[in-house]
Length: 390
Image (tube, rainbow, N blue to C red; front, top):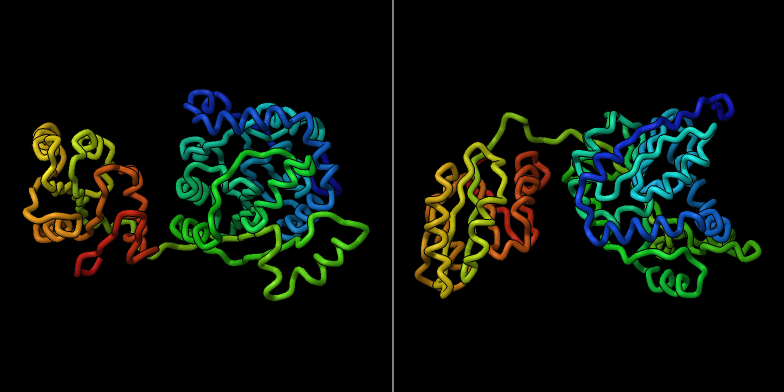
């Protein structure tokens, strides 16, 4: 099917079978159910808020020239993807009803949309790339693991790929909720709000550098031309533009500083007190991400047998390098000092024994240090480089 002189190819791509094998969380099921329910009303909501969607689409068309290879996560019924006139377009969404709607609207009746919400790396890895542009529009607040998603998307990038993240400003959340209750906005579930700095840091850790940031739309309704005037004249003014409804980030892939051959040794220091039930889980769930990875338990006067459990686990996992110490003093600070006194490896990472930070997340922090993305990183646990060159 042609669009002007360009051939618009929205290629058939199916990963539904893999999706069905995954265990959806309750939140993911709620998102899918809501999207399925709203699919039949989607066109009506788009028409009702046409001023907003037209402005958003025009700016996306400014960022993405026609004839590009485009991947969109959370594509819905595909109106944005179609408007970009890609040479190859791949849309991803959880809702089967939205997918069906996208197929119906696709040029010539052929569609490329496939479905996915949690977007695990195993599914993104199955999409053949690279892409010139990757778009997450109103999607980032619904991802369960933004860091892993960005890591997987980085693999689909060519050197000149641009990744575009579009989202609502949190300043507008009360207005949006009020509009939703008044029936002026399409219903949605509550989302996780990330600051722009948080999103920028997550992109950076994935090897993506933000090269453009834009604020747009001070008024989402036309109101006999008043909205157009405000958005063109007032919204771009310094100090005012940060109050706009719509935020856009554009990132590009960068070469990471670290080398693939460098694999520093690492100690996972786990202070523990009355955490008997988490000791084995900490060992079992911790990936072997370094060739020389040590687990160092420092137990602090537990009354539930934590120390004895540490000794048992050490014997039960002879393939893992595990050491256990009992602190004489009290408190986490004393435990950390005792751990450092035991001549740990080149990199020390502190993991709380309550496992509120998942052991599975340790490799991404390790990579951040090795690749040069960070010299000190903190997420309720610490990265502490030892005084030697990495």
